[in-house]
Image (tube, chains in turn cyan, orange):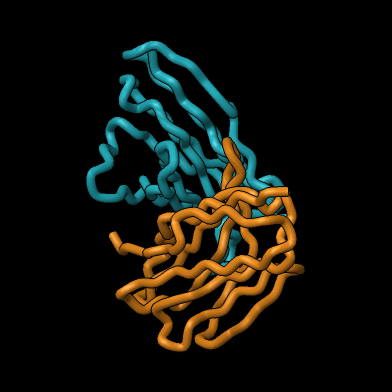
Length: 116
Length: 112
């Protein structure tokens, strides 16, 4: 149980284009999903928290117009990196927290984005 | 954001040895979680701790929630090659914020 998937697992795009990453909870309903960014050999950095049916809450320093988050259902959240630049290249990981569960987060396998 | 300090940063051990790592903070946490991350993968939850002083095991792994609620440790007994990876602690603040703060990670290498 508590399986989270991400798609795509890796993507290469050109500067200026937009990329959408999907995060799905496969066997549970997730009222809250989180998006993290991880640079090589570093820890996870929380970008934003999304609650189903409401606007995402972004961490300080994260541009909400650049990283668009949509949590349209209890099993799907999407992160769109708009007008991507090479510095946006990173490992993006989502996590989901089950409805009624306050603490435990289950992570997806991550998406490696490379912007050329 | 909150800073969780993990130590050691990296460890090289022989197969069969026991491992101990810890995580400390200047703030009080009401939940401690331990995750393992393999290269190119997302973190996998190993153990969750909810009460000060709680000691919880998951196979060869044992973790404890410190009495002060500002620290936690993870032990791995009789290490095996597949224990290789990066171990992260994560905590949720007492103040009720619903997001986790992650430690800096401990990179474990097991030498067969």
